[in-house]
Amino acid sequence: MEEVRRPSHIASVALGWRAPHDRFGFTAVARYNGDTSDVAFTDPSYVPVTVRLHDYVLLNLNGDVKLTKHFALFGRIENLNNAHYEDVFSFANPGRAVYGGVRARF
Image (cartoon, rainbow, N blue to C red; front, side, top):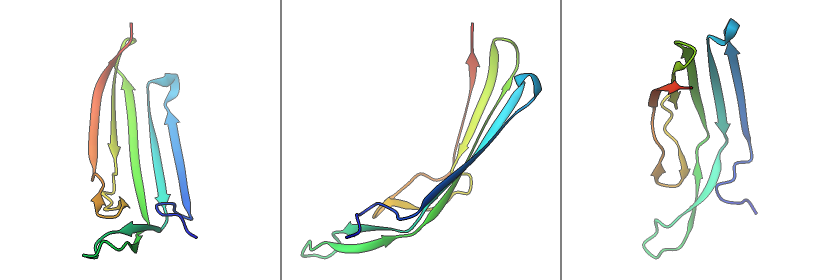
């Protein structure tokens, strides 16, 4: 019996790069999640119905740059490709999101 919300195929790959003297760098990550089964209670009698959730690929990027010995800027983009996907039937996941900030070290 197939377990719900357990894809039979998953994969990920990450690529990172740092500039000489560690001045700046980036990381790119791609994650694949295969088709998944889930249980839905869409029938008025509340009898569970098996549904298929489609496979998806998520792309994420992050990077940083050192401004001084003590300060750096950093940022990341999650779901760069703005994939529309579900890990749980009828619960949509976030779309593209962008984050950034300043890091201080003393």
